[in-house]
Amino acid sequence: VSTTDLLHYLPIADLSELIRRRATSPVEVCQAYLDRVHRLDGTLNSFITVMKDEAMEAARAAEAEIRRGTYRGPLHGVPMGLKDGYAVAGVRTTGGSRLLERWVPDYDHAVVERLRAAGAIIIGKQNMHEFAYSGIATELLYGPILNPWNQAYSPGGSSGGSAAAVAAGLCAAAVGTDGAGSVRRPAAPCGLSGRKPTNGRVSRRGQVPAPQSSVDHPGILTRSVRDNALVLQAVAGFDPGDAGTARVPVPDYAAALTGDVKGLRIGIPKPAYGPISREVGDAVGRAIEVLQGLGMSVKQVALPHAHGAYTSAMEAPVLSAEGHATRLHDLLVEHNGTIQDLGPDLRANYLVGRLMPASFYLTALKARQVLLREFKAAFAEVDVIVTPMSPAQGQTAADDVGNRIDVDGKSIEYAGLGRAFAIVYNLTGLPALTVPCGFSTVGLPIGVEIAGRPFDEATVFRVGDAYQGATDWHTRHPSL
Amino acid sequence: MEHAQKKERGMMELARRLTEQLLGGEPDAAQMEVVLARFDDLVAGQKKLHEMDLANEEPVVRHSLETGW
Image 1 (cartoon, rainbow over the protein chains, first blue to last red):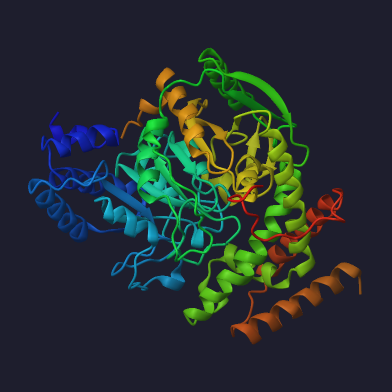
Image 2 (image 1 turned 180 degrees about the vertical axis):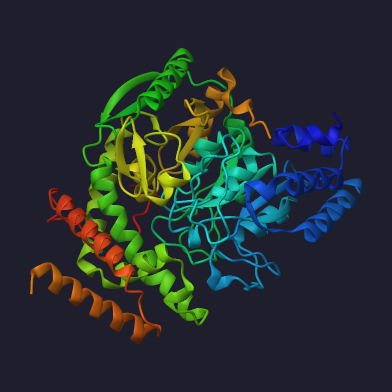
């Protein structure tokens, strides 16, 4: 086995140390990842656009810079992927839609600016559900994405391409968007650490379509919590170009990864956010036991309106009003489109959004205030809340097209209770992280979700990292 | 005409007008079944939210996590 064959699953910290010491070069690393994309992605279909020439040029520039003695930090020379909703100057940015099939922006997304400033190498734009408005990853306009762990299954979405690519070792990390769990939900069945930071922590300037302001977050997909902390460090912080970003200082996330979680308190929501299959419940239960073994305590917290029956009723009008009826409409106008330019799922959602009475949206916003107060009370008693990431693992193509998932023989609607464990943190804006905690009977990873107080990503990282220090689920990779 | 048919026809007409007037083009008739089903889901969701005591709540678009929550 050559050195380049081993590079693709190295933790970012190890890879960057090799680059810093010049034991390998950004050019060698970039070429190794591009070769792997060429070899594997014809099947997985995780990329819409591979930026081979741009990536190699950036890698050569990084190599020259490091040789001159200018080392920018842990992302310098590290190949990363972007969901195709991130505008990149001079590179086709489709948003997963035929509407933008030939659109080439002349500006970079704020996250892309920060990644470039940190020296990261962008190797391509990754497959996604049309404009990120669903998690049904098999109905994609640029073709279905396969889950590298079991190719009969979908990675889910909407950042499904990013999740599949990171899991398959086609890039060191990826950045997606999470408006209703779209980073965390695909991260879980791909065995990844998927992070949605607090609303306002990371800029959304340059997102396509313009963000659904109150629920949309950039998010990060990596193979470990430590990698995730390194990427968030590079992209977090106030941006005057996004009125939604917060002037909250960004701490040193890596410094928070002490492994010491003794005395921290875990909250278990009562009632649970939604139905949980036996195998998911068992895996998450064992994860909580591991955290207890590390010195954390556990107590139930009352969250009466955090159940999916309520949160899906809040989320749907918010997405309809802010996303489908407004942002999507603006995009159609901006690009001289008609609804015929949209895929069938989004075409229907657009019409629903335009027809929905304003009162539905206002009712949902009122309900969100109640939800937020309940979480504030819960977080007075605990430091993190731990739940499954999804009710069950294993969505086949047929499940996705039917928009339903099976929970121990009971079929539930994917866009309803199926997303309950994710959307509650989009509605509240709280930081949340999924980490792998086991495998389902069909060989797909299972995720446990850890959520924290506003802007306290550090504690969530600390708990996730301590868990990964005591387990090895995150070090396993699919056979490809 | 049955209520359901009236509702469907009314929604179809609304969707057609919205599509024509705002963007041009015709909505796909086959899509209207999906539109109606999703609209019904929204109505059911509203009924669920009305179980909550929302009379004195303010509809806040962007709650500030920065300044306290």
